[in-house]
Length: 123
Image (cartoon, one colour):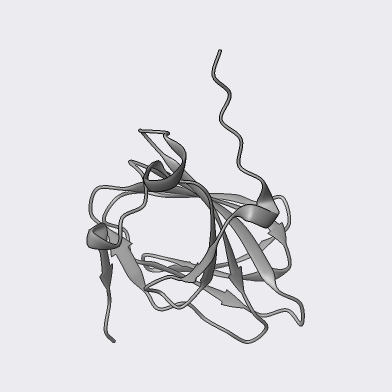
């Protein structure tokens, strides 16, 4: 059996279109998986990602550190460690870090994240 392994310290970081710092943990472009991707997004204290949507991709966010506000369509609600949020395709969303420590969120995307599938929403 061929095991695919991604080590956290080896995963490269980039700035996503929404302004968050993203560490790609598993992505088809780098790891050989096909149907989904997994990344960690970091939003620093006081930061807010730009509202955006994905037309094809369903996302799951799982909060691993910090606290903040999830903006999901017309809803705004508090999120904290242990919370998991479903973001259906086409739904505008953003994160706001309201805590003095980094907000860290695991982002699972199916199909895999693509910048081409991401539309920034200008307000």
